[in-house]
Image (cartoon, rainbow over all chains, first blue to last red; front, top):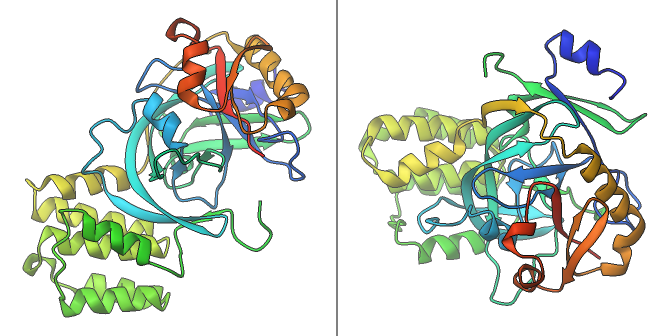
Length: 160
Length: 182
């Protein structure tokens, strides 16, 4: 149980909390908030995603997007481009439901917008997965307690 | 993370990749409409105020769905998600039967909380798997790995190869599948 579960759950700020990782991969020299996110669109395993308030959309590895069944019937999905670590990539914007797993309290399911980049055949996507602001974060409440890597979350809409 | 660039952003100095992709997309009309050119030029200058002003001033009833889409793409070049969203909603009102506009309106809509449910009870398994990643994942750089309850189920350079090692019955909500990056 996270230290502020009772206070934040009772106040209605949060409905759940979860433990987050500090790093997306082991040799990173920078701390991050890395959550475990589960797809709802398809029965498949969760993956790791970095919380990034500077990213407009959630970004998912295209191979994982296919496994999650996010990209089926995506031929007409809106095209846009995105600059990721200085590299401009083109891709499609797609909608998919994901689940934020709670360590304590309740899980939260959110329909989010993903940027799924185009890749060349046999190209591997070499960037992390991200949870972006306009695509995911701006309809949830969240708070972070770095002292115990606790991520508290709830919905901005009370009646879910 | 690069120190020279923001981690992620829609702003790009080079719109060529998107323009090329749009030309390949059948939805593009390729019209040389003065308003759209002015919006795109303002976007190229990163003049958000001009883009916003041109979009708000335009009477979109005299334009087609593809014109609205071009304007929305210009907005997204500059991270102007709210202006693009407003335009998508306007397009939905003007062209209620247009499937492309409807798709834009859907993806530009705010995220939607669908529901809640009691925690799945995977916490112990996931915590053990997180610890596995901290300790062991550096040995699997560049590979896809599947980990459950702190134990490695499989590792492979390609996701489809991992799927051959880890069948559908093991790809459950208490298994984490992730690519270990360099």
